[in-house]
Image (cartoon, rainbow, N blue to C red; front, side):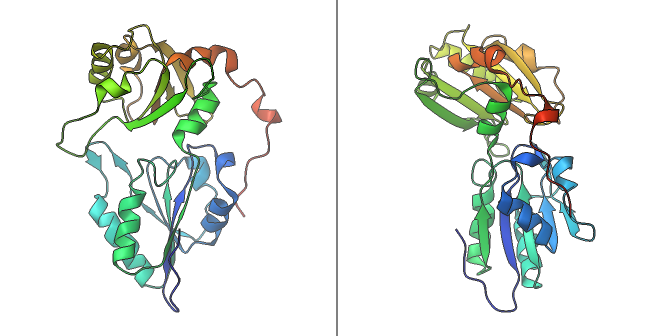
Length: 265
């Protein structure tokens, strides 16, 4: 959705960069990246995608990790407005999809309240990108008739409150964004609410990227399996019967035979 552009004013495009593989950028996202005056990007935007930004385009890092914000959200909101009001075309480049656990709604609402023209450009969300790269279909007629997407951490200094009984459904797939910090509690709560301890599970680290890791395990062993992973690396957790298919359905086409990657102009 976009707001009409006003003469002589800048505008903001809140753009989903996908899970990391530059080939998963949408055509529109790539076009906007190449045309921007300034790009404000998140920590989860891969270096391969940042390499597509033309030389001379201003770049601002606004990365965030749980409990460790390089730039607070309120400051990011204000920055986007300030840049647009200076007459520039701004691309706010965010990992995954802006409207799915990406705070894109908060940023768009701030721009709307300030009367600044903006557009949200969807991206491939980690749930679909990482699951495909790991060989895990999120739905399967015999294994999972529903998908539940949740975030594994709450706002700062707030407890993680979820409907555990609803999430502990054996015939559904549960996908957890940003869940590594609280995975011990999540695993225990799901088991405590009836999900079998031996339910298949997987952690996809750096999904869709050249250094992707897929760790196959079970719900009860999940906290131990992810304990020693690089805490800076983006990790998606998938819990459900479909996770058992990862070994059979892992992509088998060599990278050298895939479509050529996008190139910077």
